[in-house]
Image 1 (tube, helix red, strand yellow):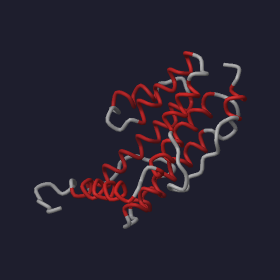
Image 2 (tube, one colour; image 1 turned 45 degrees about the vertical axis):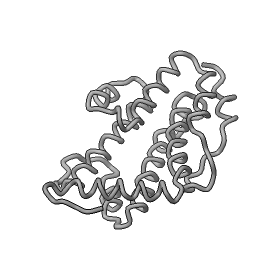
Image 3 (cartoon, one colour; image 1 turned 30 degrees about the vertical axis):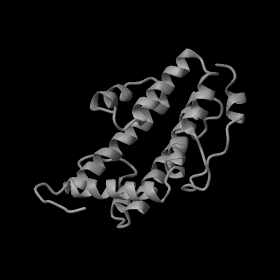
Length: 186
């Protein structure tokens, strides 16, 4: 694809400012994706599948680990490590894996404020995108990183007070779900 520099130069700046501006990530991604080759669109499809929390599976992670695209391979390897560590933390068992960011992740998990913990986790993922794309200028990896970050920004943009309460309730349920056999009142 020869027009990355035009596409990337036309993208808006993204800031992880937790809701300070409005963003429709899907519309933006659709308009950009229309300018991409079929091969690049397939990479965007991989990204979309992996970012959909309802679709992701161990099979996806195995396939992503063997993928030829650097961004897909590295981002989803990291995503899997973070998810595995989070599951162990929620279950109260020791995490057996090892990755460079794990000590920082443990500090994030120790954060009592659930919303702040989510912010810190999103910041960790944001920083990983930046790390993966260090030195990248005008290629599909920059776009994949942009689309990943746009989802993070959109998540926080859409959190009005009601959505914030729903996120909080979901996080509390996630933590409560780790204590089997105990009934909790809402």
